[in-house]
Image (cartoon, rainbow, N blue to C red):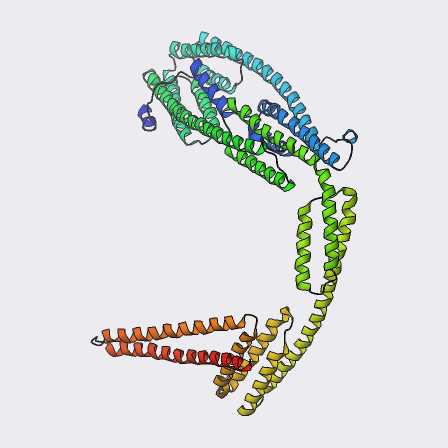
Amino acid sequence: MPNIKQGQDSINTKSEILNPIEKGQITKEIEFQEVVNDFTESDFEGKSTKEILELIESQMTKLSYKESLQRLNILKTLVDENLEKDKNQALESYTMEGNNAEDLQFEVPKEFIKFNNLLSTIQQLRIEEKKRIEEEKETNYNKKLEILQKLSGIIENDETEKTIREVKELQLSWKAIKVLPKDKIEDLWNRYHRLLDTFYDKHSINIELKELDRQKNLEFKIELSKKVLSLHEEPNIKRSFILLNKYHEDYKNTGPVPREYNEEIWQRFKAASDEVYQNKKMKISEMEAQKEDNLEKKKILTDKAILVAKQTYERVDHWKLKQEELKALMEEWKKIGPVPKKQSNKIWAEFKNQFDEFYHNRNEFYSQVKEQKKVNLSKKLEICEKAEIISKELNFKTGEANLKSLQEQWKQIGPVPKKDAEQIWNKFRSSCDSFFEARKSYFKERRLEEKDNLIKKNNILDQLSLCLSQESSDELLKKLKTLQSQWVQIGHVSYKQKDAVNNKYNELSTKIFEKFKGLKNEIRTNQKKQHFSNLLGMPNGAKQLSFEESKLRKRIESLKSEVHTLENNKQFFARSKNADDIFKDFDKKIDKSQILIKNLSKELQLIRQVKNTRVDQT
């Protein structure tokens, strides 16, 4: 015989809950369904009709017709408001172009038509669904009456193995029938269980089979208690209560257990259910607290929107800036989440009213813009005159800056009357094009000069290549000095080819250094000197050369300090067992630093020579 203790380790006794067939338990379940299914217009606030349609269509695959219809009815007001808003915007744009409002032919967007068609379709489907459900309830009621009649007939006869099987089959059939008229559920339940109890109590022919059946029922109810406890891990509250309700239905529809365990297993199942109920109730309380917090946040956003909507602005860009601020508030509003249902429509209406007031004031401002456009035309004509003068200048650097300044002024002025817009723009653009065409011609000539310089530098590269075949170091040195001087004097090549030419020059020079090592130090010195001389000849070159000189001095002083530190540290190891090896390592580092100090000092001397040479020349 199975032991009830097998399931007790996973069942914790808590405060009692009501019998699932009692009214109190049903009421609790309904309350939770209302909280879980909470849905308001604010969930879609600030969205376009297209976005609303896409979101609701994606949700409808998971919703019943009833839920879909509820949501569509809630959103109908918002969709109608969007349609009215689109009409007003179309009218505003139409009249801003100088047209009569009465001539506007507004075409209803297809999203609005699609939404209304969807609403009509779901309404019809819901009517048909309700009719089918009522028919199904009546059919199911008659089926259960037939089962009760069959049970009653079996009870009147003697019990056999066949009747036991028939009762089990009838129990399965009873459990499979779900949807019933609400006012007849309890009566059916009471009659059904009276018959079952009568069957098991009255007949005793097959006691072993009956006891085995009761033991199986006991095991099943123990498993149901475990399943109830597992609902603690279910994150979806709605799903938790759907499953809890299902487990209660399964418990109700499972036959009796041994009498000695009947009360105990029921109390444990109730305790597990109550624990889940309390846990989920706590989570819902947290959700409600969060909604209250969301309400406070949305009140703050509403206050901010009021500050924007109640003011008037003098410039178009200010209106646009404040419009962006309102959009930002709307985006923040969307992220906050739901508020208590009873406050949802009220806070949303107050928030939305600020947008309506803002756009109303903005439209009145735009009605004054037409007069401003005439002033803008006068200003742009003045800019055209200035641009025409600049277009004839030959100082391209200054002219470009001045012309770009006029272009920025042009952008800031704002629109002109539509009939003058194209003509005034073409006039201004013509002056700009004339200037930039002249500038383009100038730089075209400059590119030809750069192309000629490239030919000259390629010629020097060819001569450097020939130097690699020479044997006389003296001849090579003179040749290299001459080529180096010529290279510096040639001038610029195009930016795209500069790196390739210079890299080729450095590559050939390096190869010559490797072949004629005797000249390496002297040529390197000449290169350094030439580098410093070139640096000094560049714009702001004296400052850059002084920076190089300062950097060398700091490096030399740092190396000298390192040498001094190494020499001092060397004395600490005089009595060490491996002092000789340590001294060698210190001496090696000191010698390396001394050589580097010597080379850097030579570079420093070269900088001074270049500076002195420039002073003598001036």
